[in-house]
Each structure stands twice: as structure tokens, then as C-alpha cells.
Image (cartoon, rainbow, N blue to C red; front, side, top):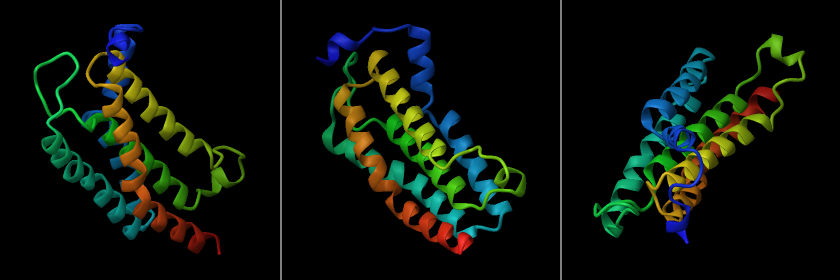
Length: 172
């Protein structure tokens, strides 16, 4: 089934989607959120977000080596799970968690935007776009992407717990 998907869709767009999961794109987004957390004196949140992102290669690389799965359009191996998808899931998910945990500035508290659901939805959309781009461009099998979509929430769980505690402290 996966082979039928390769080359579908506009090549330039699928490449842009694929690039969303690369370190040069996803990491600066998370870095800005971490810097904002530090500026707001949320050191614990910033540290957990940093450790969460550091967990991605620490988990994904050994899994890639252990499975040695061949890529769809290459003889090369170590494609399972998708590192780009895992990077996107964790970087954008961590960004959403960090920003949601911090108290909104006064000028945003008065406005009805951004709503709390917008950040997680944006993270999910960016992660989904990354995975779709990787499959349609022929960089990964669909199962490679699915595995990283499943891995993302597991890696984000400790940060989610810390962000919930931070949110409760700031609201109560």
C-alpha cells in the first residue's frame, strides 16, 4: 500500500511538509518557547522541555539501529521509526505544552484569542503534515511515521504532567 502513495501530491509541497520535522525548522520553534519560558522564570518547565526534546534521538536512534528497516526508495536501512516525525511531534507538542502552561500576558488575557485548544491543534496539524509529506515524498513507509506518532505522546507525557502542575499553580 505504501508504495502506491509515493510521488503523490505536489512535490514542492510534500518537501515543505517533510522539512517541518527537520531540526533546522522544528528545533528553533521549540527554542523560542523555551526562551520565553525562561524569560517568564519558568525554569522547571524549560528544563523539562529541553530534556523532552533530548529524549527523541536517545530513543529513536537505538530503535532505528535495532530494527534496521530499509527505506522505501533506497537500499539504506535505519528508517524505522521516522526521526523527522518524532522530532515534529515532540518539538511542536512541547512548544504547545510550554506556551499553554505559562500565564498569558495581560494584553492577551483580555482578548479571546488564542484559545487553549489552538496550540495543541496546531501541533497535531504540523506533525500530521510532516508525516504525510514524508510518506508522499517517498522518504518513509507509512508504518515508520505511525510509529513516531505513537512515540510522541509517550515522550511528551512527563512534560505534560509538569505543564499541568504549572498551569494549576499559575491559576490558583
